[in-house]
Length: 129
Image 1: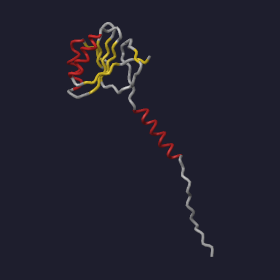
Image 2: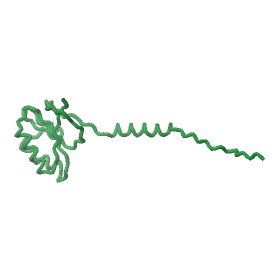
Image 3: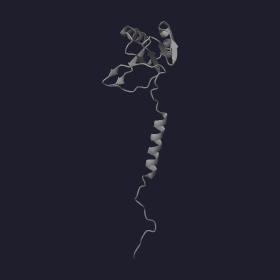
Image 4: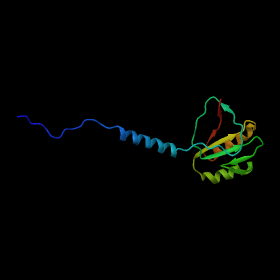
């Protein structure tokens, strides 16, 4: 007596649906990722051997003629502390410094001190060598 099953189990697995999901996830992450936007002022950044991309929340730009711009808003050097304090509201965060290489180091030290006082980590933006 020869008993055979009429329903055979197919052991093949189709990877086409898996590749579709991976492709859709790739597109989603590419579109939702945040890119570093350059500031509106032309700044000659110093160069460094290594440079990394960091998500920026607040950005300060100081030009060679000592014009300050905080998050695309022109400010005076004297109002920097109050403007940054208003933006961060006591929360810890990150401040990206786009400082022209011709700016005296004293301005960078002053800005770094104010940022540290307001519990902000500072990142000096450079261009790779």
